[in-house]
Length: 449
Ligand SMILES: [Zn+2]
Image (cartoon, rainbow, N blue to C red; front, side, top):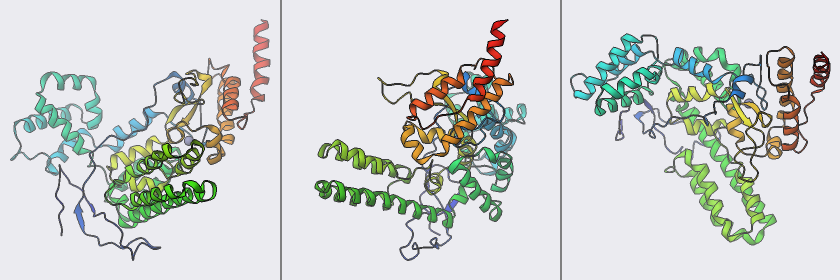
């Protein structure tokens, strides 16, 4: 077995990644040898959605019974629920984590230096004190953070950080993870739900392996990579075709760009998560040699390059490098309630959407991060269901106001109706007749007294 040089600690073994052989990658998934080799990981970075700003608005709306994402229509849940599932169920508790440190050799009493011993003993004490809290949860505790800063040496602090980091690679097996996550699956949205379905399917076959392992099974990984490359190639071809027809004078210039874009798509040395941006940058550099209308049209097509937030293949290709804990987190958080500005706040400085309730709706984190600053005009072309789901969303809110479950939001339905209508160029025109009737009956009679 060929062993690749190992940097840092590598306890997991996954299938060696490489270019699928030409013979095999036609229609079926490449049939690679199943040699297990330690794999290189990208440095661990915490993956998370754009941190939803803590705001009263989200806190209030998410508590409306049965409230759904204004875009995809799934029932959203509070972000805190995600943390609770992770801390109370998904992550190992502190004592288990400490045992793992020994079991995996991360802490080896014979070889460990002074700082490592100190760190380990400190963690062991924490495990006795907090037997039913996760490592992360304990580390996030204010008093523990203070203690670490005050009582431990910088070297020991570093070791603790390193242990926490390394423990991310160690998690429950896929069978247990699925059992924990399944009760919440109705909240998982879009591509994240599709990935969950896939993990569920493969966990039956590999119950003892983890999510990271499943995404790296050659049949899963190469099938996705191949699909992703095909779709990327189609987008690049579409740009070339568009140029030929509409702007033949740029054809020659574009030819070299197309060639380079295809090199990036199939290049093994470019990290997969960086490919999309590199292709976009490649076209962007043409701006100085072409005209603005041409570039706008080209970039619009280039934006169709699949992203991990809208394509299962892109998700698998990108996150197969991440820990199971992070993959689970992304899926769980996809359905968390987040604040969406109808008129984006960061569109441009002169034409900034206000930070008021009337410019806000609740979307699931998946839809929110996917929309970013796309205009509703373009967004509705890909997500026509939003028209229907905005109605579903406002109906729940109207019911909550009428049932007195949501107070101080009397102005919200008519005002948000207006904001949605303006931003969507009249396409989203929610019906609030029920609310207007209630408002008239209720408020007019109350005001008379
Ligand atoms: Zn959604």
